[in-house]
Amino acid sequence: MAGADGCRTGWVVCRRATDGTFDIRVVKALADACEGLSILAVDMPIGLCDTPRPGRACEPAARALLPGKASSVFPTPCRPALACTTHAEANATSRKLGMGLNQQTFHLFPKLREVDALLRGRPRIKRIVYEAHPELAFARMNGGKPVLSKKRQPDGFAERRKLLARHGFRTKIERLPGAARDDILDAIAVCRTATLIAEGEAARLGPAKARDRYGLPMNIWY
Image 1 (spheres, rainbow, N blue to C red):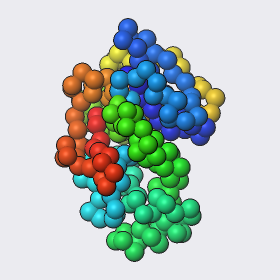
Image 2 (cartoon, rainbow, N blue to C red):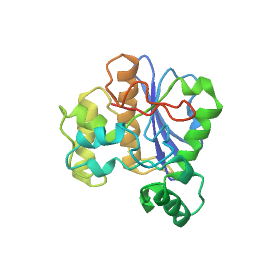
Image 3 (cartoon, one colour):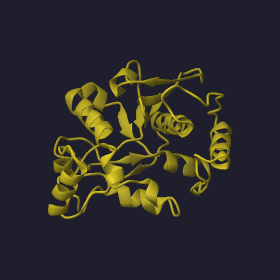
Image 4 (cartoon, rainbow, N blue to C red):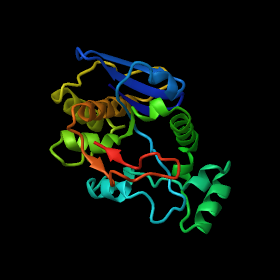
C-alpha cells in the first residue's frame, strides 16, 4: 500500500510493505509510484463534474467532518475549467457555468490534469487509486476530532507525527529534496488511509455509485 501527496517537484510517495517497513521518496510522475501496489491513496481530487454546482457530494461531507479545518478541502474545478490555461479563463468558464474558481484551486491544475489523464488512460491503475485527504486521516487518528494546529508550524508538525506514530506509522524521515516537511506528513497520513482501504476499514464519503462522465469515482476515503 502507499500514499501520495503532491509536492514542488512531483509527488511524495510513502510505501508500506507487508512487513510494516516504509519507503518514502519523491517521484516526478504519479505513474512512477504505481508499480507493485495493491492500493494507492492520493491527496488529489479524482472525478470531475461538468458544472461547478451542485458539485461533488463528497466535498461538503468532508468539510462537515472538519470544523475549523473545512477550508483544507478545496473546491474541485469543473471539467470544462480544467482545460483552461490561465486563471482568468478558468474563472470565467467556471463562473458562466454557475460559480467562479479561486487562484488556490487553479494552482492544482497541473496535478489534477496528471491524475485525470493517468486514470482515464490506464484502466488497471484506475482500479488501485483512491482519493484521500490527509486532514480527514489525521482527524480519524485523533478520535474524530480535526487537528487544528498548523502542520507547517513546529507544534502542528509534532502533533501529527505523534498521531502517526501512535497508529503504527513512525518514521524518522523529515526532509526530502523537492518536498516540504508537511508534504511528507500528508503522504504518510494517506498511506494509513490506503492501509485501511486494504483492510476494509476505511470510510467513504459520497455515494458509492458517484461517477463522472468518464466513469471515474467521486469519493473521498479516510
